[in-house]
Length: 273
Ligand code: KIV
Image 1 (tube, rainbow, N blue to C red):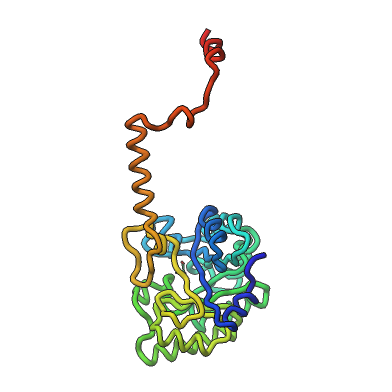
Image 2 (image 1 turned 90 degrees about the vertical axis):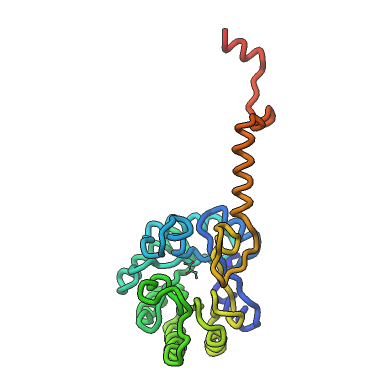
């Protein structure tokens, strides 16, 4: 049974923190599921960590559908959420078209979109048509050329606006809200005011849950953002393994007889005759 929207609402009510993690492929989704990660986000961060772009902006609905479908195939228990890419929800028909592809072709259970009160009518429209929507406020990577990559809403007026945006999204029907690079006391205050769960990234421990990017948490790159904790050094482990593999091939230690397909001497003699 997959995690449901009701489950995560109950987790907030019971004060149980919610762990969310990004995943972009089948193998990662299987591992996340086995580890008991209840919410898996197929983030458009895949543009950076899977495709090597500098921002999330080049990611298309086709990219999202391909990765999200693999994640859904790899997971049985997680609620799988996929990002609606840049400019695919600027109007209601586009938002419906993108959400339809993600829910019908990739079979995700929910979508996420970025922005405050200006996207509330889009959220309401999707929710009314049966699409569960997660919101995303604070630093919203799709607007990074406008916002800059930095902590948002430090000034009183911006903080007030962020609270109003969070309330507008809740009223529009989002089932949860990501708060990215928001000052911790402000994120804690928003979490108290909302009945839906907040999921923080660089927003402190007062959020109802946390989200991390797969590559940051597992140390796949040389550096991770300041807000990430590296739970493993998988990048270094992979590099070591690959060096050993190259050395073994060059030193003729791989493959061994056990790793090779065998053939009966008589069969070989017959083949060569
Ligand atoms: O795209 C993504 O991975 C995200 C998370 C950072 C919340 O939106």
